[in-house]
Length: 407
Ligand SMILES: [Mg+2]
Image (cartoon, rainbow, N blue to C red):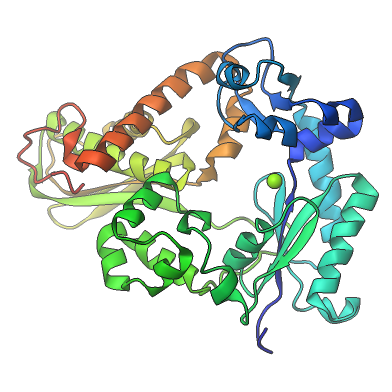
């Protein structure tokens, strides 16, 4: 690594929930086992699985019913969130002895920046990574995979290279060889739809993404395109936050200046529906759910108002966003006053796996929501194949507001 480079770790607890269960019941190591919301409820979902269950193709976030079909002898354990949180605290307490920059990423992953403290622990980034890895196992019984690099994005990539119980390095010397040969889908923020779209442009590896024209990527993916190009080249100077520092607020938003002003309730409803639809489908592409919605309205005198409200549950469903957004508009805007521009933004995003974990606490709702999520994802699939305009939300078709398939 260059002298001025940072030393960043991404540490991932291997099969976290399942491994914690195996600590308490070692016999579970010998059978395919999964942790789920409620094993009695068929509608419960798989939150984690051990290696043997993985061998049967059992996947996180699928229903128990789907998992059992692939692996009838699957042993199910109810999730014990309080215990997992205790282990999360214990593991992070170890990390925090090596640096004050420890940023959690979900319950079982953390970024560490050891640049400033490395000299206190011998000065060798890889040796310290191994020390940390061994210490976690010695003190908690869990295994971790550590990725070492000069930025967060490549450190995360590196931690996936070898598991369980391993240290992998992506350095200035080897990144072309190691990172660039990996599928683009390995990169954070490349979801299944983005992956498919990239393939259509003959981009299937991170190296091809790094070499692709930034203009082309921007044209097809907007801001995400710029981000993907930078990430593929290891250009990521986002800091590892200090312990207790708030996570950056990430957001997904979309706004349109309409071809004529919005006047009626129907005008507003049509626009909110279309914007929510596109914001939600991008969130699904990134695998992120929003917990807050924001509406920005610009009137004909270019006066701007912005209003926010929390969503009742983390979501990437268009209907949830548009309902909350309409409530905001109705509460803060005199319907009939012309609107020039409207923007809808989902804020405080969290990874969908994390949201699934929270949702599983409300079993009754979970199955209905899963159905709606599957439905909207099916729409994503059709659009991938036939273009965005192939499925338009009800009421948006044939509008005279300048909303077309691009939005
Ligand atoms: Mg993990």
